[in-house]
Length: 151
Image 1 (tube, rainbow, N blue to C red):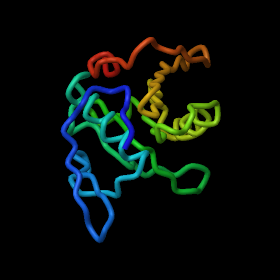
Image 2 (cartoon, rainbow, N blue to C red; image 1 turned 90 degrees about the vertical axis):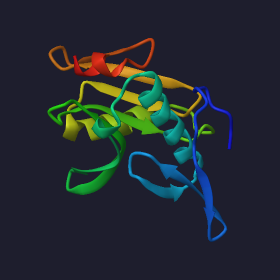
Image 3 (spheres, rainbow, N blue to C red; image 1 turned 45 degrees about the vertical axis):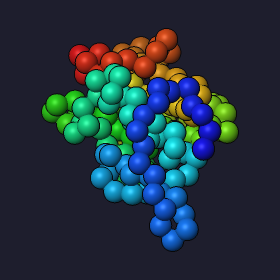
């Protein structure tokens, strides 16, 4: 797998039936090691170990219903009252972050109405803070600490 623009972390990789799997510390199970999953696992470790995100308030593959269709958010971060506060969308390092990627996460936000939208391909990371009062958003210079997104 490719080198990412994230701090190194201890990712546990195994092989089953000739295919690589990675242990997802949030779902507490092994999942297929795809390029997107490689990014997700590194980013999750970054949030937990460097940005103070609690493991118990961060969930992968969160099911939502959007216009009658079931979808899955890559990661959702909650506050202590279990209100969703951020949605994170991952792409493989080879995938460019485009308007379409932001459109996808914005559609998910129609259901969850979080304050922060985060997108990463492991090389580039973007975070928007939503401003619902003015129907706008602001790009932040860096991924905020957990206490800032719930503050």
